[in-house]
Length: 483
Image (tube, rainbow, N blue to C red; front, side, top):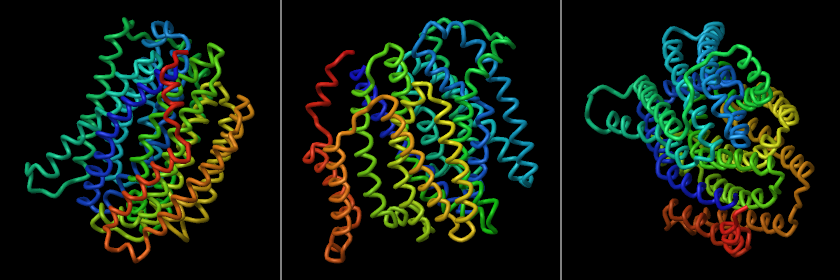
């Protein structure tokens, strides 16, 4: 199992490092430069609004499918056609609900038009995720890896032509970006379905009311968890846009920093994608999970700390280098969100383990507390500190919910805390911070900022091995094991 984790993680990381960072920082960021903070802020806020209600599009079916199929692969023959029919019904409910609530909170005609396309895009993306959940449940990680980057790859091609291909003399429109997403998401959904059908003989669509009700009851805990986590992850941009007079601009400023954070987060999220079926399979067969937890933690958490420190100390330089009309506030938001990245990366290990173990009731309690805390903090901090206040609210929320999840995993699975490794982790963090502060002093001005950032980052990688936080020998041993 550890061998499967490492080999597929390597393939998944390779594809995503090639595609997603360039899409987010190259294409998506350039689009914001072209259309301006206000227009992009409107899009970013509406996108966040559609995310708030994706629970009604999925109701936890993706997580339920991944966990169930990984434990009992033969159930795909029984479930797929019926669940697919259910998802079509849910897509209709989702679309109508989002439009009604959008009208109630006062979106104007142009915003509703854009919202319609974003709803359709979310539906297409939702079907892709469902097809991928079956692929990962069957442990067909290579197919899933290809689909995971296909939409971004297509968007890179289409948007590059529109941005730099000289095919039009008109200024770039945010609507073009949304139309391109529709095409890319549609192709990805069809490709994922083809991969699935090439590996499984599935039955035709079959609407079964009783089965659908049973699935909804079983997936309800997953649905609630997704709803709660989405609210404290995506509500910030919506609250910024609705609460402030210059809300669209503030949402755009928040998007500047969030984009870099999302680029890093997409890579970290891959761990959760692989770990959920692997943890589920181990737990079903009553095998220990400590080894897989250790290897995932030794790779992801130290890496997240290094990335966070590097980006935090060079946040303003990175923002200024990427955006035409960058602000000091954008750099502040970015720096705070990258600290959040450490906590979220940790959640992708320990929260995923709790999900695989079926501790949904406990996770929902934690997530509900996170939602309440996040909304209260946003209501207090946004009017005074605007986008920066929203980032602080996210940091506090993510930090506390992550600590709770780690503590619960330690209790439930009797995971031993390696005091020596933790101490070395603190030493590593202190060394990287100290080195970063030193490199930012005036007497290093003869070196370009990106050179200093590279020195810090690669020195940090070296310290990971010097302090034996990452041990190559142990990774190799785990790679050779077949559980």
